[in-house]
Image 1 (cartoon, rainbow over the protein chains, first blue to last red):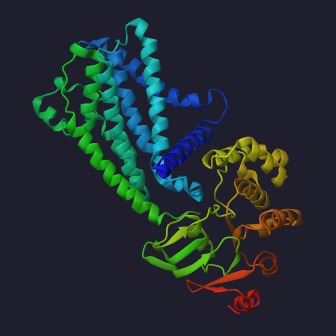
Image 2: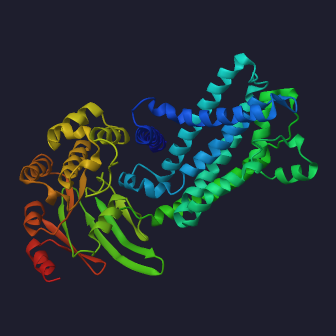
Image 3: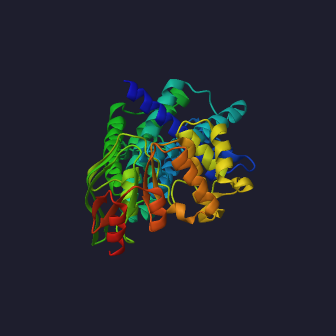
Length: 260
Length: 215
């Protein structure tokens, strides 16, 4: 028990140190510094929301276009940024392997956590800013909204665990990940609700885990105003399997990792 | 004690396979100062990396029953884009040390002065060595793994290292990879020679040097 709690303390210490280091190397201490982690998704989401607002008007299928776009876009960019950041991450951080208490899984966790925090902060910031103008609703069911976020984040983390080692094993990964994450948009549930689609399309999209997470978030956000479909078990099982495969690959890659 | 049990390391690149270490067995007890000799490419750095846990062995294992430093070498352990102070802060955090204490030791030992506020990538190899030694001495390990790097330091630095490692910390173990026989003689009492992927230990330094110079 004693060694378990000691291991945990070391783990927390390492994650903390790596987060600070990552923030310092990525954003520096100039101007707004680490707040950039929030500014980036914020600019993305508000830009796209504004565009959609002018293209599609204020309301579509009974929900506000701005709120709908933002609630879909921020989780989507979380996935894209987090997965993008996990590519060849072990080689990039190789020199840190000099310190035995740092494990390669820490790198994946740290980058994911930073993206997660940044996107959550952006979401919260934008929601609070738009609330007074009636452009963003007060969540009908905050618990359901958060649960959807957890599901979406778990799916994202699972793919980080998978793609970090895969990108070390094959250089092709580095090339196809940006395209693949872009082509994934229709399967992310970001820009349409299941209930807007034809039954045939719904049946196919049901197999995409982020669609369930997104439907949960929308149920939590818009409540009765939207009709949602989701399953609690399938997305978790899917992400868990991906995580297990990813962790096994991480182990294999660590064994052959060459550090300069 | 550190024990290497049948350590093997193979590197693969495409269809090329290189068996660097083919079964290494030895141990280092507390306080022993051991030199690691071998020709370029014999596997000295690889062995130090395995003992330090930087890379994993293809088979066999390293048992560490005392605290072992990270390998002090030319690269590694630092983030080039961060300043000396930031690197020190990072090391203090991951090893759970009080930063203020570590900082004053590093300033004192490294004599890098204002350079500590510059990114490490702007340092010369001698300056890097100073910083690496300062940090690892401040953390206090039972065994120090040193990969040639003492050599790049100037006289003053070498004297300081000698003082810190031998006079103040004579109970610590040391594994020193080096090509400099005079240096080996002044630092070590035993030697391990790596040749053709295998290691042989000699308690007679003269004999080891003799064999080494005929490799």
